Amino acid sequence: MKNLAIFASGSGSNAERIAEYFLDSEDVNIKLILCNNPQAGVIQRAERLNIPLVLFDRAQFKSDYVVNTLKENGIDWVILAGFLWLIPQNLVEAFPNKIINIHPALLPKFGGKGMYGHFVHEAVVANKETESGITIHYVNEHYDEGGIIFQASYPVLPTDTHEDVAKKGQVLEHKHFPEVIDKLIHS
View 1: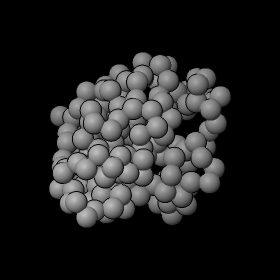
View 2: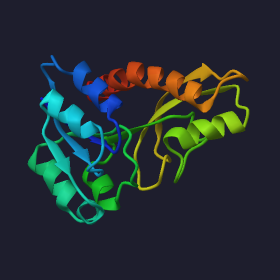
View 3: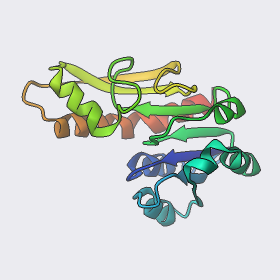
């Protein structure tokens, strides 16, 4: 049995999609959802999905609290699904090549500190890009610089708003993120 922990800071739609995907799995278990935002929608999703939730603050994140919590729960893989904080060195070292993230653009474009959610989609529209997409990548101690695992793209039309771009991206996220996680775990 492989135990996964999902980190999220916001609504948690990707966390929910991943949990649903593995619901009947015989060898993958979503053991924990971890969140740094006490107002996040993912908290209600975790409760509804009956997945234990761990809330933490910045001091706990930078200390060994989060790493110890993951190890005590036998976590094998860490999945970042809309998690906005930079992963500290101690967490990267504790789970080498076992932390993956999804980014709402085709990295290396529109990555780095401050490039998340609507900021990414607004930048795509402002730069008059003709395509955007999603990137699933390994996590290191720098924002959006870990090795790329998977990318999928969609067309951006001249009439698209950043909301249109976000909707197109979320369709790809919900379709591909659980499948890519599944393939990685079983490779």
